[in-house]
Image (tube, rainbow, N blue to C red; front, side):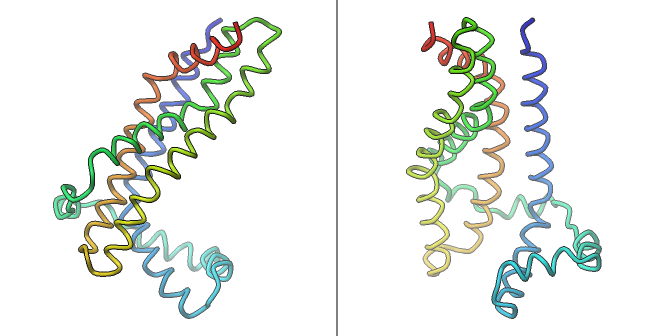
Length: 192
């Protein structure tokens, strides 16, 4: 029996998880700012993590949760972030989202002799996505961040970058729903 319904459910769960992450961006930005301040005092990331996991700090983190506000979104400088960069991040996220699942799904379409090989293809798919991310997305994000640090760009561009990267991850998980079947067929074609 074709497991596509279960696969689509898993992909929908990834989309919902990403949506929750989008809602937590303001809280994360606030916590990240405080963590950087604590890093200057403590001098070590592991000590900050241990400190953050104390019951009193977890309660404080929950208490300081910030909901996204419309004015936060409206104030972001979206136009300054390259569109091609965002499209690439959407596509790469889609590939990451379906990498493992499409390989396992491809195993459904090949003969019994090739099932293990097809399902093991996920490493190659995610490897390609990692290379694309490293060559095409990460450098552009680093340039925007570096320009903001050197005051050649407003800091608001970095905030817009973070929001747009998370938004394109959300779109990438949705695109994964479209690409799952063709990806599985492409993988299966190598084993026929």
